[in-house]
Each structure stands twice: as structure tokens, then as C-alpha cells.
Image (cartoon, rainbow, N blue to C red; front, side, top):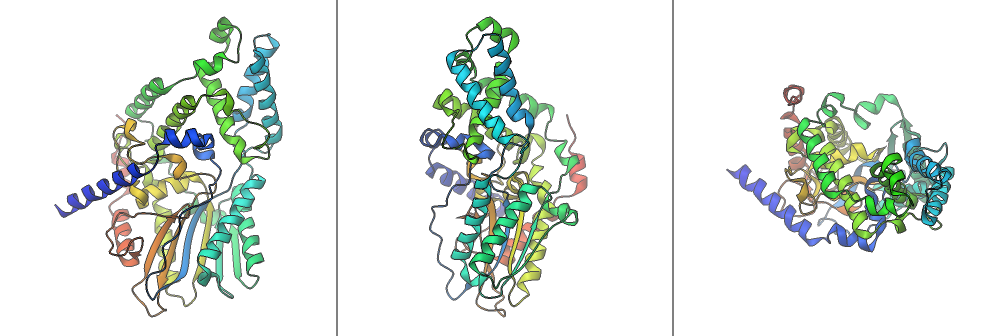
Length: 438
């Protein structure tokens, strides 16, 4: 009964917190870049952090972050729209606007050519600014010859993000003792790909659910119709839905590149069309990585090894006199399910009706923009102080956790660790295998 009451309380708090934020439609109307979902450029945090608990000071930070801004990762992301519009132009089927959109798409394609997935200059700058703010917010942790241990996945954009962070730290404090590495040895927790679990994402129910959702929210006809001058050609030769998708993807990617102040594709969409396209992306990411009952509420457990590593490494570091900082650089496909598994800001609450995602607080651009990060900041009086407190920052904003505390946003590390270890212990590979496709 107590567990049920506590779960009900957490859900109520999550709903209240979500209700206090602007609706995504309002936010996207004010800033169209937010419609880009996982390609939103990292926003500068605005929240003023809470003062340290009385008598305690930060002594250790455990971090997992996504690489900074990058180009889109697939050639098709750029080629599909360009080739489709190019063929229509050669057939004399583009409007004046269509020809201008083709020109803009070609500019984006040419800048990204052979750079698919590469870190952009903005991405490097984001890594530097995030680490500079971390050092400014928690100077005690980076004092003198503090130890910094950094790791990244094998992706060049992650290695470079780590490198930019290390450069920034060295510039701000040349005395730091920094080690950094990128090795396949760490991939079992840094970028674990649970193929057995991922195979259960696309159940018959979730596929139908998403297809029906997209039918209700699809809105490509008007926009694509402004680019072509022949409805018969459009109907017979063009997949308007796919063209809309790739133009929308390109529109969102521009903010991460050097062309961000020279080119836009957002002008070809209305605000309502951007919101509906975003909603389809928002639902897609929830079904793949969130607590979705239709695929067993299991997907966040894909990051169970990462969470366990964070806990075990934190315990080892807490035992040291000067533990310093542990930095990890990976991907949003790791950070998003990790945030759900940790229950940050109510992300551990299952949602059965995907039409309620926004009302329930599942708004993807608030969770995993480019450069997104989770920071666990640990506090104590001295090395003999066993009453270690921790707060968690999601994108440098203080997050709510799924356990009780008398000193929010600070939680007892023992309580938090015990909660997560019990949660991990309740999950087993057998449970994963027991959930079969219908």
C-alpha cells in the first residue's frame, strides 16, 4: 500500500511539474528550432542552482554526456530531398519556391558532404562551454591538482567532444591531473546495444499504434504542394510524405552548422505543421526508449550496465580523499533511456496513451538536445562524513528523482544507490526474454 501511495504521489508531482511548463506548441511557435527533437542545438541553461547543503561542499562529479552538435548521420538525410527535387526540376515540375528550396538543400548537402555525423564547430564550442560552467559551478571539485578521468565511445564526434572539454579544463586550470581514453574495453557500459531488448520495440501493437498516430498527425500535403506545379506528377512520381520528412529533418539540422545564420527551411512550414511533425518524432522516441507498456516497459533497461557502472565507480571514488571528476561522452540513445531508468523528472512513469505524452511531461527536446548531459554532484563535509548527499542535473538543470528527501534537490546517496540497485536487481535477462512478440 505504501509503495502504491508513493507511486501515486510521484505521478501527481510529475503532472504538476509538467503543467507548470509552457506547452510545446507555444515553445515551438516562439522558437522553431525546438521542433528538431534530437537535433536541437544545446540551450544555455537559465536555472540558478541551489546553494550547497549546510556545512557540505561538492567533492565529486559523475557525468554522462552526449557529443555536441553534429551533421546528420546518413547520406540519405541529405540526398533524398535533393535528388527528389532535382528530378522534379529536370522535368519542369518545380514552382519558383521549389527551385529555391532545391538551391538551399544543395547548400546544406555540399557543406555536410563526407561529414555525415561529424562534430561541427558549434559542437566543439558546446563541450567547452558546458565544462566551463561545470568548473564555475563547482570550483571545489576542480581545485589544484584534482583528478579528472574522461572516457568516450569510439565515435569520432564523441572523442572530439571529450577532447574539446579536456582542452577547456587545461586552459582554465593547467594543474589538473587529466587522463582520457576511448577504447572498445568500455563499450559494454558506455554504449551498450541490447539487440535482444531492441528487437522487442516494434511489436505488432506499437507499429500499429505509431502508424495510426502518424495518420492523425501527418500534414505534408500543403507544404509539398507549394514546391510542385503538377499534382499528377506529385501523385505519381513523388512520395510526398517522405519528402516532407527529409525536408523537416534538414530544417532542424541547420542550427548545428555554420549555415545557421544564412539558410533556413523553416519558412516553408507553418507553425502547426512543425508542431505535428515534431509530435510524430516525439512519439517515435518514446516508443523506442521510454516506459511504454506495449513493449513491456523494458527499453530503459538497455542502459542497466551504464547505471550500475556509475554507481560502482561512484562508490570507489567516494572512498578517496580527492576523487575529482569522471566524464563520459556518448550518445542520446544512451542518455535518454538512462534518464528514464533513473526516473529523472518523472520519466520512469509508464504512459499508455501517446496522445498524452506532452501533458505527461514527455517532451523530447527538453531531454536530449545536442550536448545533453546528466551530472551527479556529490557533497560531504570531509572524507569522514558518511552522510553523502547528491543532486542530479539534467542539462545543467536540477532534476527531481523518484525517492523521498527532506532536502530537495539533494538526496542521500545511500538512499539513491539502494533504490537503483534494487531496481536493477528486479530486472533479469529472463524477464527480458519472457516478453515475447504477440
